[in-house]
Amino acid sequence: MTRSAAPAPAFHLKSPDTRVYVGDSRELLASVPECKAGEIDLIYADPPFNWKRDYDRHVEDSPHSGTDNTVWDDAIPDDDYLKFTYDWLDGCIKALKPQGTLWVNIPDDWAAEICVHLKQRRLHMVNWCIWHYRFGQNRLEKFINSKVHVFYFCKDPFKRTWNVKPILEPSDRATTYADKRTYNKKEGESGLRVPMDVWYGKNWGRIQGNNNERRPGHDNQIPEVYLERVIRACSNEDDLVLDPFLGSGTTCTVARELRRRSIGFEYSKANAASAFERIGKGPYRIKYAEPTLHVNPIFQKRNLTQPTAARGAEEDGLF
Figure (cartoon, rainbow, N blue to C red):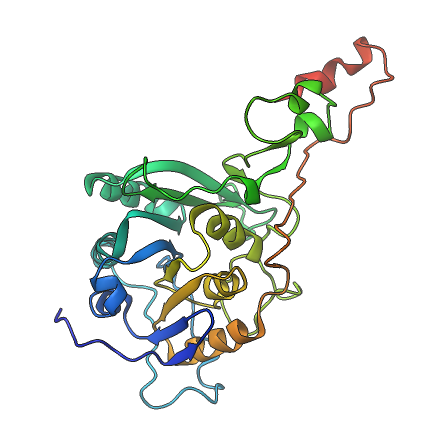
């Protein structure tokens, strides 16, 4: 792979600086100036899963697609897919600042390989989170998949950007069990906690066709609240956020609303144009001045008027 001269973005907005480039992320990671210089604060990557998906289903009907538009092959041999994966991961590592953070969204198929590779590259794992959604592809031959792995790595665990206050959420102990200890913490804020490492709840599901967030024509779309949590927690205003697989544009859409600069790479010219249109319109749910307050109790509020014996089973569910 040859390193090319600095490319020009296909689409660009100012205040904050928001750029979308069309091309192979591996080549762009090696040629976009901020990536070459290691100036990226936060990278969020939701790469192709090699699941034979049609990420370009709307290309033929798109007014933006031309004879130069290329379509991503999502059914390559496993060895080729892993080589592709390791190449873009290495490009992301080089693009990060010393205090930078890398997030990777990946299914069961490739989680082990990616985790090992990042550790071998001397990155530090902060969290192995799970994005849990309420329904997956129906099947009879095995349990239905309802999760994706969310890797949170950084270069330096002592220098990483970590903002707690804008991501706090009500504790189940406060909302469900009326546990007074949650209001007398030495750390954090009264009745609130840092989210747990399994992410679920209202507006956290897969973005399906009847969802108001849905961007028509895109095969895969991450919820805005997911990127809000990542971007608020691991970057500051005016920081530079990169998404090497922009897709429907969620990362740059949320980053722009939260006053971060951002760069998106997209292989498909038509997808890039559609994502940029969405970025210009702004997010459906996220508001800059109003961090989303997630309330995700598994049980109904505990009835403290019941006799202790009657609450036994409910108490067993306190975790």
